[in-house]
Image (tube, rainbow, N blue to C red; front, top):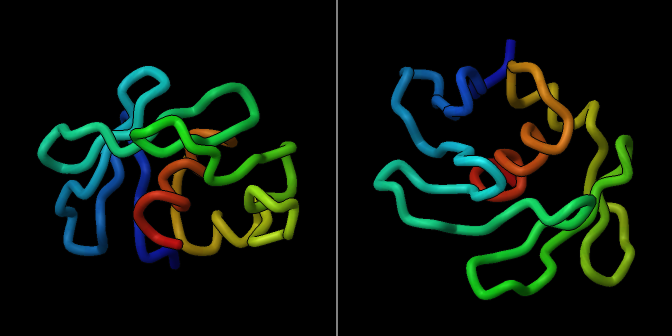
Length: 94
């Protein structure tokens, strides 16, 4: 069973506490502060710096090193989504 659940664009921990949300292309914490954004296949922090990229299967850091796969994400977060699920993993779980 996954430690987190992503539903209705919100990420919840095992106790059902909201810890983050996807607001369009923006990733926000539980207080609504912008932490980053999804920019096509790239994930950027609040300053616009590239944190990672996702090709549909592999997640790579800004230097091109593999940091995980979609299967790794789905082991920790229950929910539907590709890039949105990866974004929640990058900003809140990883």
